[in-house]
Image (cartoon, rainbow, N blue to C red; front, side, top):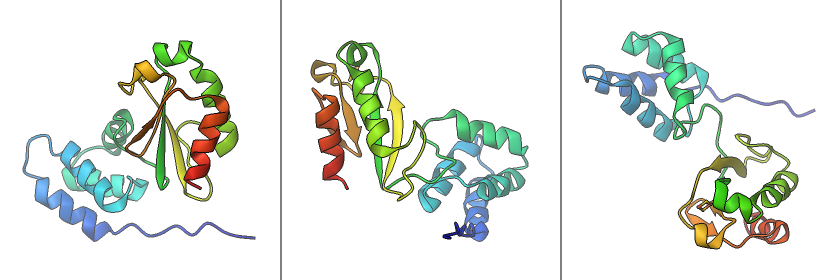
Length: 158
Ligand code: FES
C-alpha cells in the first residue's frame, strides 16, 4: 500500500526569510508571503519556525495564515479552480456548475485532488457577471457554463 511521504521543510530557508524581515514593523505578513512563495504553501513546521523567529505565539501566526485567502496551509494543486458563487452567478445556475465540479474532481472546497492536479476554491465575483456562471482556472476565465461544459473545461487540464 502506498504511503504518504512528507517532505521535510527547509527550516534554514524559513529562518533566513524571518531574519530578513524581523526588524520590520508588521513583519508577519511579508514573512508568510515569502515563505509561501518559496515552499508553495505554509506547512505547520514553517509556521512554527516563523512564530519562534518573530517571537509570536503559534496561534497568532496560524490565525493570520488561515484568515487571509491568499495563504494556503495545505499543498495547492497544479491548477487552482476558482468558482464564483456570488448572487449573479448563483441565479444563473452556479450551484449546478459547482455540483458538477465537485462530482468531477471528487473534492470539496479547499481540497486538492489526490493526484495533486486541482485545488477547488470558492470566490466572490470574478468580475465577469455578464457571462455568469463563471469559473477561473489559473488566470483563464470561463463563462456561460453549464454542468456539462464545466466538465469539458476540466478535461482540457487533465
Ligand atoms: S457574480 Fe460571478 S462573476 Fe460576478
